[in-house]
Image 1: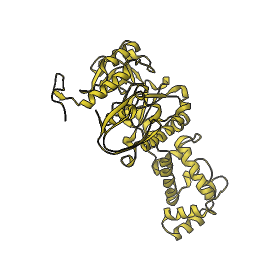
Image 2 (image 1 turned 180 degrees about the vertical axis):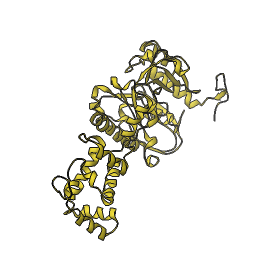
Image 3 (image 1 turned 135 degrees about the vertical axis):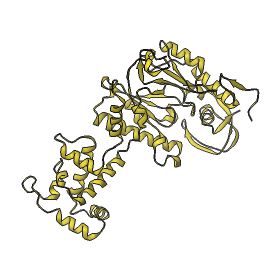
Image 4 (image 1 turned 60 degrees about the vertical axis):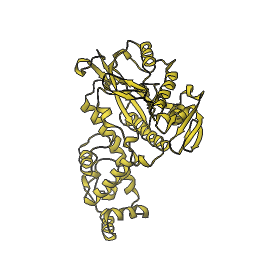
Length: 399
């Protein structure tokens, strides 16, 4: 029960203060005692926003340098702290158009909010799945398809349930919201209906790349040995609906076309490039539609589109603590991304020195900081990192 003496007062309302949150704030204070701002360029051109432990979001703050940022954080002990992905002439102005927008990084936010079935996953499973999506974003889309290089990317574990990827290459800073939306739509595979793909493939005069090449490769692979492959014929049966239709289709694939000196239809469909999309009939389109869905599912990359399109977005401050997990926002080098384990590498060292008494509100099981925990509800003493994690996530009360 909340102690009635513990009351936080701001100019708008009285809020009861939770004793556990007071203790959690003290632990955050310990973490921030020697904290300094890092991995943020031009901090004096960024808007600062934060959520205090007892109160609501405060925005439109500015600092002169990273030293002042460290002082600001130590003074305020935020539950969450953010900085703008945009650069401004006057970041402290409260009216957006008066800030003097100069440009913004291109940001991608990946977390569990957009994962299908996330509500049935454990925290560990969520982190693993979001990491898979982030890996596809970085290596397939940003580097392979869009041509960005390692030096153009900054990667962070968000401290919560996902990752943030910042593109900091010169060409992105002046992009409009609409241009950023086009990038987001491309990465999410929007606009890849059967009709759109056929039309786009027929109109192209360039070498296929990106989504188009991946889809084209799948179609070529499917038709390359269809006549002899029973597994593929079984799939075709399912797509076309019955044996007779499938058999007629297989026969029709040997019909000559006007492509490449009267090549057979199956030869054209097996050949890389755009000719196949000019000769497709309704049954070919069923195969095409299946391949589009298959490719999209295999390359799924669930980004939060509003974050990418917002040219005034606030994003979590590097090396700050996430108020709902107690884990740190950690920068990750590209060559270390595969090995990165957020439940080990984002744990604050200052918490490892502690043991904390908690009242666990329900049974909880997790692998955390190199240990497996199976905890039963009730009062107990646990290592500092797991105690902070459980208290920040409201699974336990600090005693």
